[in-house]
Image (tube, rainbow, N blue to C red; front, side):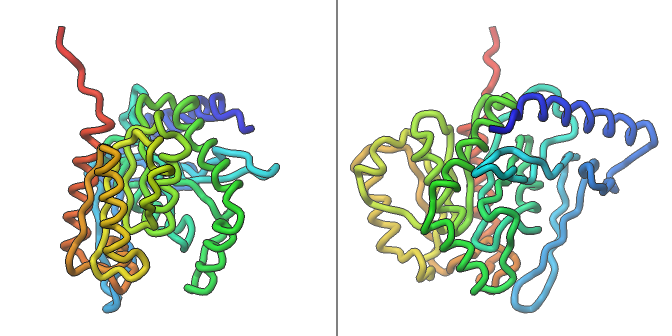
Amino acid sequence: MLNGKYYFRDLMLGLASLSLLLAACGSDSSGVDGTAGQVGVETVTTAGSSEASRIQQTLQRAIVSERLPYAEVEDELVYGYFAFPSDMNDPLPAIIVIHEWWGLDDHVRAMANRLAAEGYIVLAVDLFNGKTGTTAIEARQLMLDVVENPDPAAENIRQAYDFVSSAAGAPRIASIGWGFGGDWALNTAMLFPDELDAVVIYYGQVTDDEDVLRPINTPILGLFGAEDTSTPVKTVQRFEAALERLRKNYEIHIYPTAGFSFANPTSRSYDDKVAEDAWKRTLEFLAYNLVVEEVES
């Protein structure tokens, strides 16, 4: 297994030195891009909807990001996308970000940046061994490779959790994913039913099998679209009913006019108003479950 403790220590020292150097050179909110990371308030531009519009998301907090190995699965190093606030002094709560069936692409990295700018350590994992899909056929095959052989992906997630927990020292940890990643965000709660502190599922596949859900003690936020044919409303409602019968800590929101992938600006199903509301709910949920308030003596 990858010795993340010392890698993370060396990474932090190196990036901290870079931050100090840039500050001494008068770096401001324009940001600095480079292979070692990104320091400064970063503007992320992602492809828009069917009209090919572009949406700019300005991060209001400076971040540092790095492509790094966080796991070793089947004798191969696994590289993810790691981001955190540039002013981080002490370990922060961590979020394990899990990509859609397209793989670890620019959209997922942009979402990781947004979460890091909110004050979290973020590790966007890669379940596709560095591959990304450029067509639906390619993406579907990448997804099926994991569905048909889930054990390496599960080990990948286990080591991701160990990395942010042991190496990065995160006091609390959440998982979040979209579509295929939503499936694995829930799977992460199944892998760490007592340890994971929050899970956010965007239009992922869910279950009403109470034997599967019973061990999970992680607070769950589920965000779904009523027009999503891949995860029908009845399936979501059965999932919600099972959580209710089991008296789990959960929030389920079904947006009446939204379809699958409503939060991805590269999708034709993107709905900016629904995406904005879902993002607001996501941040409130994560803050409530991850941020430890100091108690005055």
